[in-house]
Amino acid sequence: MTRSEGRDSTSAVNLGWKLGQVVRGTSPEGLLDTYPAERHPEAARVLQATMAQTALTRSDPRLDALRATVSELLRMDEPRERMAGMISGLDIRYDFGPGHPLLGRRMPDLDLEAAGGPLRVFALLHTARPVLVNFGAAGGLDITPWADRVRRTGAAYRGLWDIPVLGVVPAPAAVLIRPDGHVAWVGDHTDAGLAGALTAWCGKPAPR
Image (cartoon, rainbow, N blue to C red):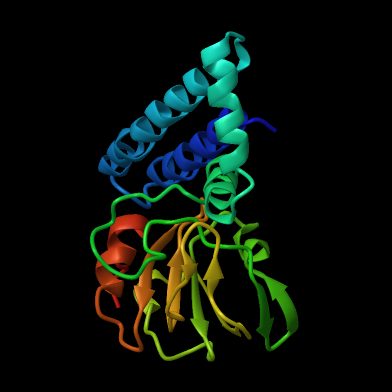
């Protein structure tokens, strides 16, 4: 899969779950306004990268020298990791405001330990529903008004949170993951901001 194809797939998923929620009446039409805000800057980045790749396929003494320089840089860890992040889409960060380094980024497909056995993060997203992962326990965060829309699970991750592109980041206490895999909220052992994130991405709370 090329970088462009991967980003096109990401755009389709980004729009698909939002359309689904609006059609079902779960979220207001304003949710669709987040699509151009999130994806248009990424489209511009894809265009820029494509233009750069096209230039590097041409041959003249100056471009040959540039290509050799780029090849040398890609033998180094940091440039190679950044390029891998661009190709995989792990470098994408939507602007959800300040906070944990994971906020707005795609959740890595970590190997988790859950009550039912080993679990991969992306397996939780197969139902195309938002997921709240509480690391260490299934409860502790009240999402009752959104319980019909959000999957909640407790799990543990053993090891450093060494994230591609970011490096080692503080271990989150909990994360809310949108259906497209992007982290919409990161908990720090409190529920501060959780209700706002749930309302923004999962619709208004149901009456208690």
